[in-house]
Length: 129
Image (tube, rainbow, N blue to C red; front, side, top):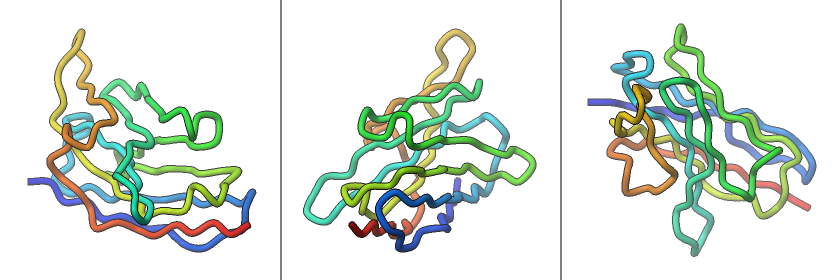
């Protein structure tokens, strides 16, 4: 079983920055793929960024160049650094973990919510114009 706890959300003005943290219990280094998702009011949950076992990353087009996903294995934590925030980034942000699949020795997963079995409770991010 994997437990995830998000923190770091809040309210910022457009152009500002926030750094979200996801503490992962039962963490075995690169055993799980961890990703960030978000869900705005009235919209479907969408993938934001994922980090594979070899530290490879994948981002949604809407956040490329502005968001960075990273992890600190010593702290069992995955981060999402969000810069140049826009009002359309306003959403509940969730981290999630997946067993993924092994491709060329690397554990990978995509940005579809269906791939992820374990979810945190979410942290709210609000960006005002």
